[in-house]
Image (tube, rainbow, N blue to C red):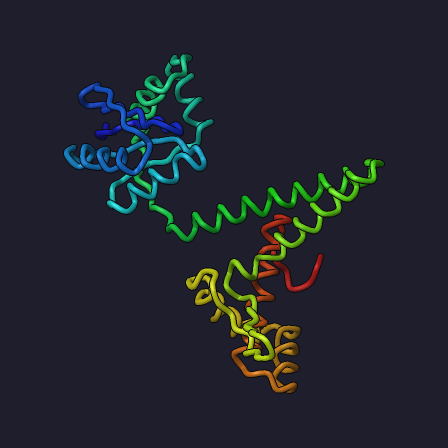
Length: 261
């Protein structure tokens, strides 16, 4: 049985239970509280921190533990509840959950997990926001079909335009959308900027690969070159194409295939 600390995470507090000493501790769930928590954890020997995946509330703690290279196990709330029921713990409070998580990590000998990069967390948050917009768009379409009041129709139409604009900002978030620079009669060439630099770097090599091996992408690239576009501009266009395709696949939960089935 390994040395574990169970942490029940809520918006305002981190309720901790150290299994070896059977002691409870509580810290504020903010930067200062997490700093004090790390100081305390570092005093323990080879301890595994166990907590539930609670969406926005757990991500900050996970990032802090990963930054300090401290081992942790993030468990599914449903699995944690089943473990609690199997051990006869039907009550559910912050202190009880912290005890249950510490025992779950020790009894099941949970392995430490590899922390995900902050970029992955950012992309997940963006994907969640996009899915929410897609649901909003579907709801707005339904309301537009049943609403008869003129003012409400105008409001719904304005909301649909706003949602459409936000859904087409994927290229801007990736830093692949051309940004115009203009002042009076002067206008510079459009450039890509902003967004996430690591994403642009990650998309560059796949774009080169698809230009070489995918017929439609190669044709688009060759056509842009023939019309006088610089090679970097043509490659960026292919990168944007891949970005849009990836967002569609994620949105609709599809697997990519060379030809639609």
